Length: 345
Image (cartoon, rainbow, N blue to C red; front, side):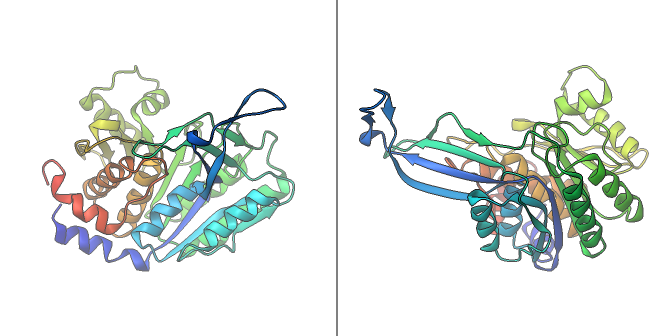
């Protein structure tokens, strides 16, 4: 991809409208100073003194952060938060971002705000070290009334957007935004708008999802197809093509340091592969997958080919993994600066 072609694609981002459907959470970072360590008089246990607290939208919010970094004009979250302090903090963080429309970001008093609390040991001249995370989640089924409101929101936004991204971040089925009722609505939308980019990613796996574009890793693809764990590139490309034909939509497979594969649904269309950029120092892979998802959706909505979309996504993820101690993003300028380093560019 030439710099000129990338700029042509990116020039359309400010006019895009993208819906982000799924599990938003609060990423709260507690920065700990080891030099201020104490011992509790009451318990005799070590005390970690927090010297700084950072919070930002995580989960599907990380996808939003990446879309904002790209300059996407309108971003519409379809999700919920609890009626609690973490929910207030999450919505405040989203509200500060340009282009966000929060009409369909619902407050649900009966649910807790999904929160990742991440203690970090921070010492001068050293990369941050993350300690055991403290998570807050919902472990009961999403109430039917909330399901209905979310389904209504998805139906309301679908006719006016250029792409839909769906992320299932929760571990327990039916406890988050993406329930069977919402997937049924997503299937209706996919059938009604076959040309609309709809990109799906799920921690629980994508089995049983409607015919939308899947984004997954090679192991998840093999599981879906009931194949062996052979991850040779040619095998992955063949499997991706099989899944794309089965779905009737493009499929994207991330291969960590080996790059990304994309396959289209048309018969006889060869799968595409773009390698990763070489490492340029210490890395932190948190958020890399979400940066891929955001960049794929934006590029496709802006008219990029499958190969162009995975090239942009590969570069973006390379930039993100070199941001330590945070869930990073990549801007158009960041991607443009690395474009010449992509093998075969």
